[in-house]
Amino acid sequence: MLIPFSKNCLQLFCNFKVPATGFKNTVKRGLILQSVSNDVYQNLALEDWIHDHVNLESKPILLFWRNSPSVVIGRHQNPWQECNLNLMREKGVKLARRKSGGGTVYHDMGNINLTFFTTKKMYNRMENLKLVVRALNAVQPQLDVQPTKRFDLLLDGQFKISGTASKIGRTTAYHHCTLLYSTDETLLSSLLKSPYQGIKSNATASIPAVVKSLSEKDPTLTCEILTDAIAAEYAACHHIENQINLINPADETRFPGINSKAKELQTWEWIYGKTPKFSIITSFNVLHEQSLLEIKVLIDIKKGRIEICNIEAPDHWLPRKICDKLNSTFIGSKFCPIETTMLTNVLHETCPEDDEVHSKWNIVCEKIKGIM
Image 1: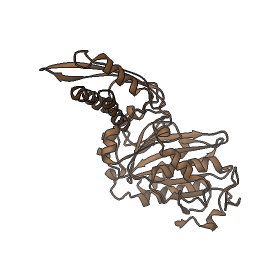
Image 2 (image 1 turned 120 degrees about the vertical axis):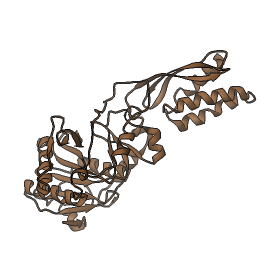
Image 3 (image 1 turned 45 degrees about the horizontal axis):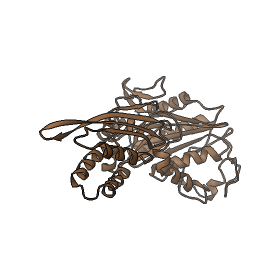
Image 4 (image 1 turned 180 degrees about the vertical axis):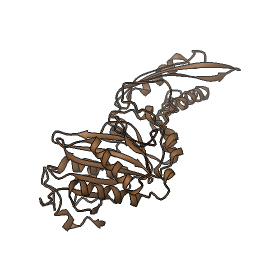
């Protein structure tokens, strides 16, 4: 049963670790919530707001949420290593970095996200996944879905329909997982395949898997059917009312400070700047007088900014002083195409009348943008 998360519902919410407007301590056993937003940043902010503010002692929470097309990387991952950033820009797919660990996932409206909030003591990913399996079997007994040791859910023993990540705090924790019921698998596969070469990084790497949507097995399995089934199983397991409360994660009156959390998650400093230090060692060829010349590139990136840049080109094609100028100009800049485009203007200040050098400088910069 869906109901709006009104003031009356707010009064059923949990104890808060810090004062929060409009909340009382009357929940006895737990709560089931569903976000009305499809914005990945708002929903990730809601997760962390609940984690940071709610006293979950004997009062677990299950949150359902869905996002418009987005790629979500783990806290310790490298987006250049995990996804096709150029294709994402072309398709208008958002990139987000979550606060939990784990691997990269693709979200769209054909994917249900589940977040299980508990105390640290009661945190149990396997039990949560078994709950989901029971719910799936309740609506379709013929489904062969099993949890794995990696806390994924496999359909027919080989197709991944759910991946897991978690955040464990001092006293509280959450476990979230995906549930693919009708996702765009072609786009998922294309977006989660990095085209970038020569990356050396110690960042957490995702493990590739073959995925399948539940609707391919049973077209009658809709978001509403699956959500209701999981909610019913959760309510029965925790002896609470089977009632899904609709909430708006952009509502500051109910979640004070949540919009600042969402804004932080959208910043370049969080999405890209939190990438563990990495290097790119690569090369490319340029055509010169009927022959190909090799341009070597070595770039070290720290906190998303270029720390060391060494672009080497044959002196007769691009003079050493021009290469040195290019290298020094890149130092400290963001490792992104927009910043590189801006840097091409530096040449016009350095050599305002040398069209040939301008052209070569632009060729190098365009090639560099191709690896960003």
